[in-house]
Image (cartoon, rainbow, N blue to C red):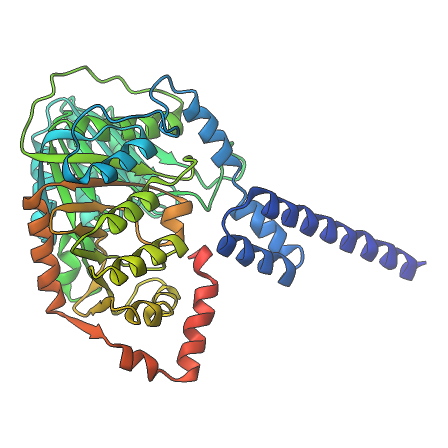
Length: 474
């Protein structure tokens, strides 16, 4: 009798496992999330019965993606997903790239902007603090990572201080990235009249639980006049404190922006606030004043887009290059489209250079990225590994004229799963500053040669190839 029960239970169990695996496989094939990603998940489901299917439904099922797409489609504005969105102004020599930005985001590029490139860690945070302390009306801040350290505490304390002074303070933080953030300091902001909200909470009972989708954006808008965005999170490794202690620190790039583009960053924040809270923040209309000569397109992207804006703008920039493409990316795991664009540019005779960290802070990312080196070096692309610290900047400079600075890495996670934001800038002064920064970093880097890669041992190649299999999950 006991054997019969166990036998029946076993049959029921394996029947349920087979059904779950079958449903997961059908969902994978039906939803078509790209060959690499589909094959990776298919391998996981087949190799790990039940566990693979459960992981797929918890970590990769795009239910929230469909929900948010429907929500944004209902927005009574220009449809950012249709070709009917046409530019209304002169976008200059790089009009095709700017048009891609417009048609993938619905945000029209604007002229008359001022962009300041911030590369020094202490200088960047000093500029941010200076503007925060001078805020008079509102501070809207949105970050993936706010550390529980001196820099994170100082940032939150400033927000609490400004809230006590009557400034409208709103803070969006990613629930996973800022999981260990100081809760007492968040409570102090709230007690002073500020608002702090999690983006996609980790509680599985919440309606919009999706642990695999994260808000990777970094932006601050102050009084609707000044904005900061780029690659820097809030933590000692970004602010210079870790560097002074001699511990792990990051080399990054950030932007200070003024002009009409600030209104677009406000819109990005407002949409995220509505998504997280269900409320639309009120902000007064204001006269848009030209501050400089930069033409800027703000490029938000995320899993709520039918076509990922970050990926397509990287692609458009690379394929538009006539002389040079200089890229920095801390987590370089290109998909087939970006890889083909880079190879195609090199074959046209474009000077393509890629700068990545010699030591990556994320397991498997470094080996996975190195698995692409032979393909890149074989067509004349130059690859450099930055030695002094962890490179965290995400920048692209095209022909020393067009630049892209933001939060998006060149990897599948940024192109498929993360909410990102960047600034596409047509301004020779900004491009020159980034070009100078890149050239300086090359002097502190080791160039990887084709001869060196061809001499790698079988074990090393195998390790890199195995890591590459996990690229859809990294």
